[in-house]
Length: 248
Image (cartoon, rainbow, N blue to C red; front, side, top):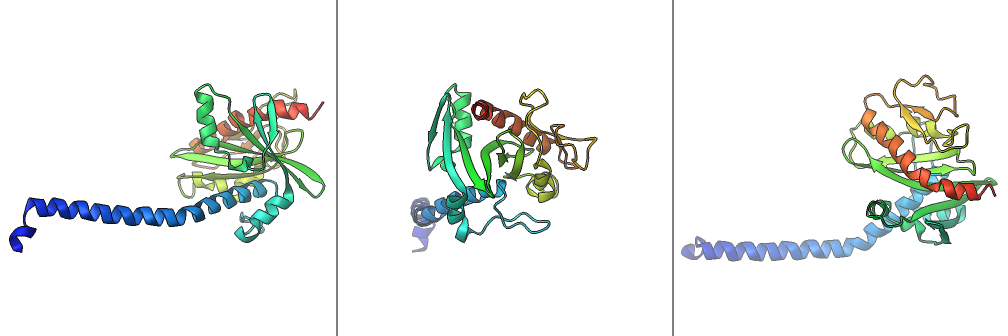
């Protein structure tokens, strides 16, 4: 018995058997949990969109989504239309919130027409237009949802990240930063798209001027802030033609 377990053949066969067993177990676990993961991802997107239009469980200082138990019901209650803008074509699609923005950005880089999801919500008699954005921070991806009125004035924003530095760039998902965007104009005085710059050394640290197209930067998070500015300017600019149709 000792001779058999010390042989190379035994070691190789043992390794193969273990790989097959562990691989099968991992595949089984993935298969069993995939539906739950997919459902949770859908609910999280709905929570993000609702948050941006002010449907959330915020307290005085912290940012909180509506609970997962009511997210789907609240989404159906507040989101009245889901649009997909594809070039000059605009269609309604009740699964638009499932569009993968990262894949659409990749399609655009390859010269294909990018699909732009837009969610139209109603709350307290007011209309909100919510768009997803995605970009790059210091270490990895950053993303968010921005809600606007018909004049492209920001009504709310939610930002998140994959791996920004805790206490620095990771603070883009804190209320003190996200709330600064509320009321900021995305267009300049000439009605041209200017976006919003996360400005270091901003002369308006209390962010009282909502027409300067700037918000105050997070100390020590310059690159992450630049990433937020870039994804706002790059992705939201694509929606300008749609908002012009609202003026006709």
